[in-house]
Image (cartoon, rainbow, N blue to C red; front, side, top):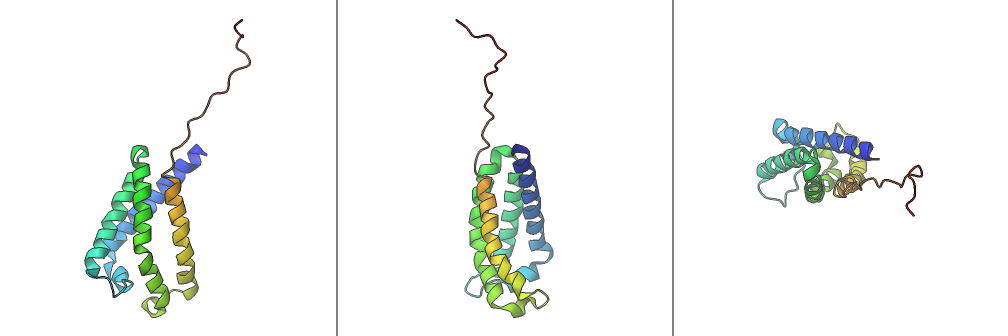
Amino acid sequence: MRIFKTLSRYLFAIIFVGEGFLHFAIADVYLKIMPPYLAWHLTLVYVSGVAEILLGAMLMFADLQRLAGWGLILLLIAIFPANIYLYQHQDLARNVSPLLHLLRLPLQGVLILCAFWYTRPIRPRVAEPSAALPQET
């Protein structure tokens, strides 16, 4: 389980770092899905991109994984309104199936659960007493 958690943590980190860079490369895509009740759309797109890059990078380090996990949970909650807004306004992304927009909503919960998993410390292995050792009397 330890290897799986470590490998999945690196994969999760790479995904978030990559997504973070996309906030700068294709900011217009993210600007489209910003709910109108939020102010400073471009600033929020850039701030969330920086947060994804930093938290994803932090996730790669075992000493920082708990903090990164909690930060990612907060970030995923913060960006959820944009996912809802996108689902409510299908015309913003006509080239993507409405079903994919709908599936993205519960996927956010799965991502939050994954991030929560990374906040949990890995339990150290407990060595079982060896039967081959002589017993003291």
